[in-house]
Length: 308
View (cartoon, one colour):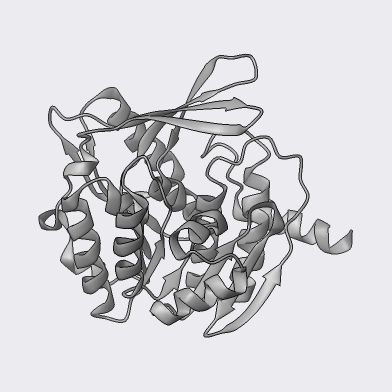
C-alpha cells in the first residue's frame, strides 16, 4: 500500500470519560487523532504525524492506530517522555475537559521531525488551532508542513479549534488568522469562529474566512448542521435529529469524514452531506473515538434519512 493521502499533525491524547454511573472509562482523543480515525473509517488512507511517549499511554495510542488502519510511519516514540491525557466530566451545563498535557512528547515536535518527501506527496495535510497552541515548535512545524504540502499542489486543511486554556483569545486570533491565510480548506466550528472573528452570522463568518484565503469553508453549526461555501457559493445543510448522548469529538468526526470524501472524489457539498451525517451519528455514544461511524454506517443512515 502507498503512503497516506491525509496526514494529521498535532497531539494525540488518552481520554478518561465520565460515564452516567460516575466511573471513568479509558478511551482516546486529541483532535487530530480523532480526525485521522474518522477519515480512515470513511475509506481514506490516513496517517498521524506526531510524537508520543514510551509510557503505556503512548503504546495504547499506537495500538489504537494499528487497529484503525491509521498509518504510523511518521509517529515517533520518544524515550522517557510522557503522552498527554485528559478527563471529560458531564453535568447539566454539558461536557467539561480537564487536561494533563504540559510538556508532553507531542508538544516537543519540531520542524526537524517533518517528513518532507511524504508531505510533498499528500492529497491533504491537516492541522488545528490546538496544534498551534501547544508549543512554539509545533506551531513552526505546522507552518513548514503547510508549505511543503503545497509544493506539489496538495491541500492544507485547517480547523482553528479554539482552546482558551492553552492561549489567550488575542493570540489565538492573530495566529489562527495568519495560518488560515495559507489554508485551502477552512473547517471552523461556529462558536469558535464567533469568538475568533467577532462575527455572528454563519454566512458572514464564511465570507471572512474566504477573504483570508481558503477556497472551501465548511462551518459546522452543531445540531443545526453545516454551512458549506465554495468560493462564496454557500449552502446550508440541516442537522440530523439523533439520540445524542455526548458531542465530544463531533467536529473532528465531521472533518475526517469530509476530507475522506473529498479525497475519494466528492465535491465539497457532497462531502459535507456525508460528514454531516457522520458527525450526528458520532454523538450517539460516549467518548471521542468509539462512536465514530464507518463509511457503511454513514451511508446507511443517509439512505434511511432520505426515505423518511
